Length: 327
Ligand code: AMP
Ligand code: MG
Image 1: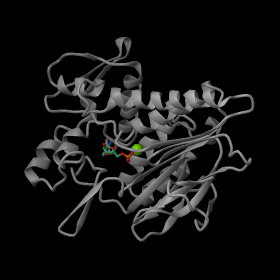
Image 2: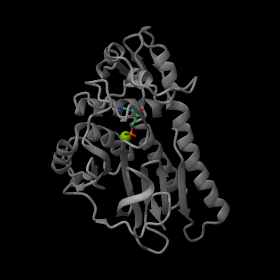
Image 3: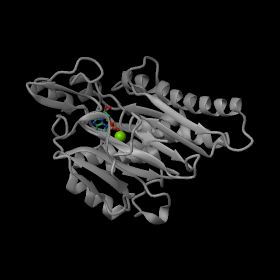
Image 4: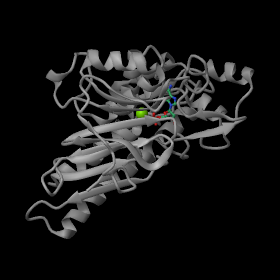
């Protein structure tokens, strides 16, 4: 997944060191499995096989996990009328993210853009098979798979009996229970321009928070910055007034509207953070207010806005560790 994953876990009473280590290893293994299945660039992965068969008419059978993530990605594509589109791969490749970043020529962008079409993905639920309808198409689950991986890590930790932990996978955080001292976990919202520093801090308990930011992957050319969240309508990096958007989903179904979000699912928060980045600040805040979603946005002028349902935020002076949280 191209990111550093960190898990801090505390042993509950009665759990030995080895048992805790095993629990954390299981959580890492679940995340590694997600990467092995869904990394578009890893030869032999589910997504690599689906992409290779694009346009051939063949159905490719995939793991149940992969199927679930693709299906969910298509849900967000529909929800956003294609602003979120998991068939973004041709544009990602063209811009060279992951290989050699550069600004493509206009006609190349036009050509790649026509291959980005979430309505041309066929799913067969009866045997977890997938098919892309046109040659050259490709899935890229980079906007959602990390969230799914964090959900699987969380599940593994819980299954092992761990009740206090924090999982941090490059902007996707899951705070399990409380800190050892009984307080909530402190999770920083990163300063878009200064790695290792934070513009504000949230306190989370049994909650996931996922951030999409223009600083995660970008290159500069002619004094202009090109980041990795692509607007499928233009084929260019989304011209958003957002530098970063952090999504915190409600913990219960009652707390949100019925558009079908899964409470506290990191996968959903991940897809939403990317989707809302593309929509821009005003639409993102409106969407969040209407649907019971917590949002913290850092905008182009470095201003901070929070939606109605966002957790309380605090000044960041006291955040000292370089990894997005304080213990
Ligand atoms: P995130 O960091 O979760 O916001 O995801 C960014 C990643 O999502 C990029 O590196 C691409 O792999 C992928 N991506 C870029 N643009 C889009 C888009 N419009 N819809 C879905 N995925 C995208
Ligand atoms: Mg995302």
